Amino acid sequence: MGPSRIAGLMKDNGYRAKIEITVEDGVNNYTIVSGAGGSDFWIQFYDCTDMAENCEKMRFYVGYNFEGERPDAKMLLDTLNVWNFERFSKAFMDPEDHPFIEFTVISSHGISDANFI
Image 1: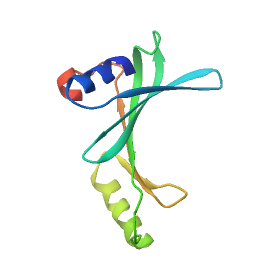
Image 2: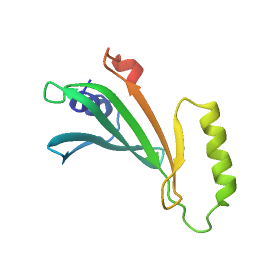
Image 3: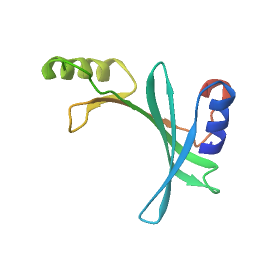
């Protein structure tokens, strides 16, 4: 599954989906920018072939900024550690202490449209 197919599925199901292409070290990197529930999220594609129509992995991630008073850093870190223990995704704090959640999906053998949505 590649970014064009995933973006089409998302749009067909009411999500916004904009494909962004960046080039790093001569390699095209594909990212879908979208959102749900008031949060923006991104889907990055890795190990793509066939003009990015077949990608081995997709990484979903979302980050949060705090407005107003920030929570206690230790409490937030404890919450992220509990999340990492109980979930299949990874939660972490970026260098500015914003929490992020990341989840990688192996798609080399396909994912049905219904399972993706």
